[in-house]
Amino acid sequence: MSNQTITRHDWSTLIPHRGAMCLLDDVVGWTDATIHARSDSHRDPANPLRSDGRLRALHLCEYGAQAMAVHGGLLARAAGGIAAPGFLVSLRAVELKVDRVDDIAGSIDVYGERLMGGEGSWQYAFRIEYQATLLASGRAAVMARPLT
Image (cartoon, rainbow, N blue to C red):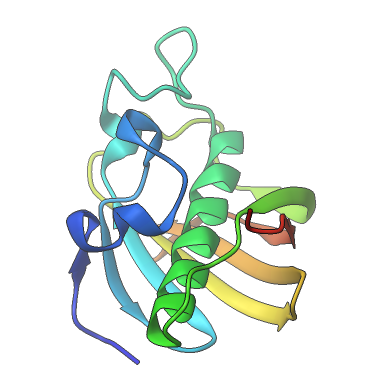
C-alpha cells in the first residue's frame, strides 16, 4: 500500500502506546501483509524497558509487537475503520542473537509479516535487524478485545 515513510505523528494515535512507551519512530513502508518500521529508542537512556542501564534483547519482542499494532491500525484506517485493541497472548520460536541492544550505534529495522488474521486474532512473524544483521526474530499471536 505504501512505500513512503510515515512519521510517528501520523500513526501514533492508532496504537495504545503513549509517550516513551511508543518505541517505534517511523514506518518505512507497509503492504496488506507486511510492515517495516525503524527505531532509535533502544539508545535512549530514558527507554522505559531499560533496567540497570541496559536494554536487553528480549525487549525486542515488544518492538515486534508494536509493529504489529501499527500495522493493524494502518490496515483498519485504510478500510475506513478503527482497529480493535488486542492482547499479546503468545510468543513462539523467539531467537535472540545478541544479549543487549542499548549499545547498538544506529537505527534498528523492525519487520512484521501477518501470517494469519481474522475477526478476533492475528499471528505475525517479526524480525529486528541492525544493518541487515539479525538481532531477534519470532512469532506472536494477538487476540482482539471488543471495542466498547
